[in-house]
Amino acid sequence: MIFILDVGYEKNAISEAKKLGIPVVGIVDSNNSPEKIDYVIPGNDDSIRAVKLYCESVSAAVMEAKTAGMGLSAKSDDFVEEATAE
Image (cartoon, rainbow, N blue to C red; front, side, top):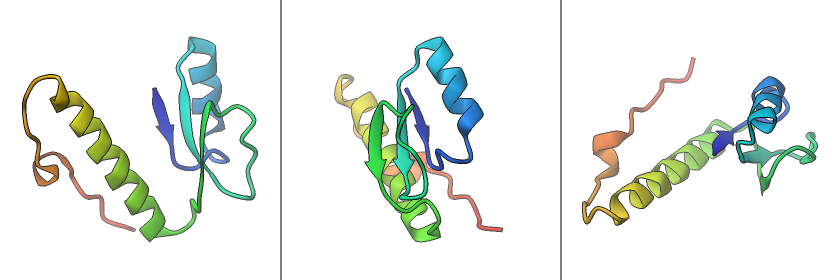
């Protein structure tokens, strides 16, 4: 599965994922088409705060899923590296 924050900008990644049969989860803003996205999440992809929320939520869900079957506990601080805005 691939997670796309800006489906309008990452058209090549979406096309490659489709060719390889990889499911695509994407944040779809009102100015983009959800046509090639398998799992649409309607939302704002222009706001830094919104993008941070999406990334933190997806990261937490992935870590929870990875550790659920192993009987481990994960702290988000141990696994998330924050990127600085330029």
